[in-house]
Length: 297
Image (cartoon, rainbow, N blue to C red):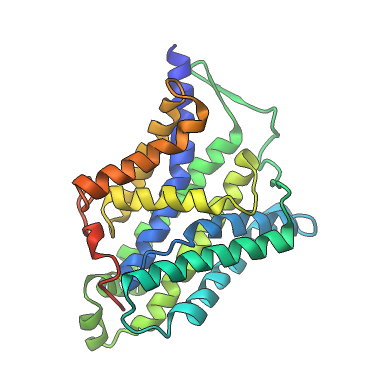
């Protein structure tokens, strides 16, 4: 029984780490622009799909690195073409635009890669490799997922705290008008935020691909889970988004023991609805969800 619980815990922490990265992407863009980017989940899909295609002609590490950069540039392109020229758009308009971008990316992916499910090779060992931990069995790829996601969170925290650009982004998030008066080019920081969010999503999509496989329509469910993490953690709070992602992942994994597998996604949706109804500022504090779209950089 203890080994089974540990197995659920490992599974929950692994998926929760991916949800957390998606939630961080929501938070980074929201902090800079006041926009909730519902296309965030598609960046994970693009990272996985592009890396799988490039892995046929490049070494695995080079394919992953190239996919991260390409996806980051796609995020920048979307921001410049569809968002940068908008001035004080309404909440409904931004929701429609970002959902429309999600659909556009998904349909383009369907055209390029078709409906076939793809996957990167395991970064260490293969699908039969596993490690024994207190009676539970975990794939070495799980360690890659946890390690890469942990490094991304640590690097992002260091970037925001220790670099001039990161501190400028924090100033923009706190008060965009004051940041502009101090000479900070907020438009450039907004573009950078889209690159970072897209690149982080792409790397998460690459590292999870050997375990979950990658398909053109996987981004929608990930966006919902990521948005749940952002809301649960309190919009704008990166650390809380990580905690919320791990919590949701563990709860989903544990729910399998008492509910049919088909109901797994209901857990995150139920959490999101409960938070929006009863505590819109999130369990860990932050900006209320009712303030979506009221800020612009």
